[in-house]
Image 1: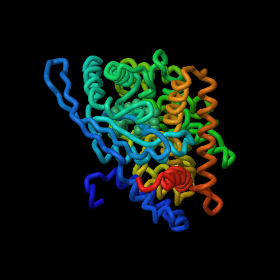
Image 2: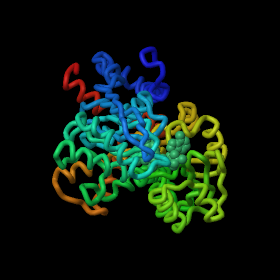
Image 3: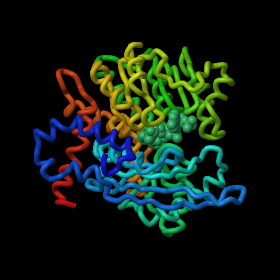
Image 4: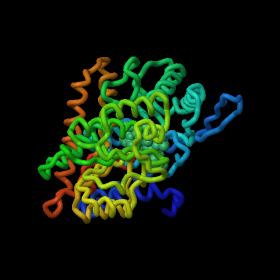
Length: 433
Ligand code: NDP
């Protein structure tokens, strides 16, 4: 904290991991003696660069670009790019740190990284977004590669942005390589990648529910966010017989007391991915209650899936969810719950999955995209979905194996220890580097 006083999100992510790892480290002191923790909290490399571009009015704009290459002990750096005004070094270090554990949990050979820019794609034309992406990649391309660092999407970076970034990389390097994931189907993307994080989160929650002989059937499910993760989490919940009672964006929450319908879901997909509109418009279109400036957590629900952003569910929200009888929280977003909220869920003994376990489906599927690219072939949607499902089950299994505590599973402890061991053992084997 003394070295980087202005990085609260990074400190929060490290504190959550170290607190739950500590008894394990004391029982296995060779990790501490080798300075593994000190090394894991320091990025192997942090790159920061100027991104100049010209807007539609001919005005020069300058944003800041970053790539944090956190840990390559078990494979090339892997992790998304985020374009959002809140992006800074501390936010990206938190995301990259989480990514190291998450990628390890998938059992695929991927190190951890994260990057992005404080560029805000909202309200920008397609041409402006393209010019920005081209400028961003003009610097980033020298730091990434199929065997070095393979970025993907995250908040503000979807199929459109990945396409522009890939086009510029190919032009600069004169190579068609698997340097980004989340690509379009026509140029090397994998089926199920857009769905993977949301589906994976619901598969993970299903495993947790099964462990207490429950399921999604007939449950009220509160979802936050309305972007990539929220959209496909909602679809899978509906498929499993649950009732999606909310969606949200940074301006407010839509409440669906009887559950989101197929027709409303199709409207959402067009609104967010094609027309790039706001949820308020959807409320007006269907006559659904729109709660301006509110988050979904005050609505009574059985299951909560926070799928928007970090620290969107605080202690007060956690108390409300518990009071209303919520039995399961599975995070689709990265670190959506504050430390206080996490403690309250664990104390209450409900099923609580941290993002690094329950949202690992996205990066797992990105790993499968890299495999398909390397083999120069395509798996069917069914094949990828089956692999995704089995990876989520095996992450659940690993959490149970390391997280059992007084007859219950502490998924935070389980995910942190299971993710840590593989990376730490690889670092030990590779010497002090
Ligand atoms: P999108 O950009 O597609 O959607 C983000 C959603 O979150 C939007 O509804 C957005 O609302 C909302 N949101 C963003 N910032 C805020 C904020 N400060 N306050 C309230 N709401 C906000 O991103 P994704 O769906 O891809 O990502 C969502 C979360 O999932 C992130 O935490 C991301 O790191 C995590 N994640 C994503 C993966 C993926 O494969 N996409 C993989 C693993 C984790 P608005 O439109 O108003 O900004």
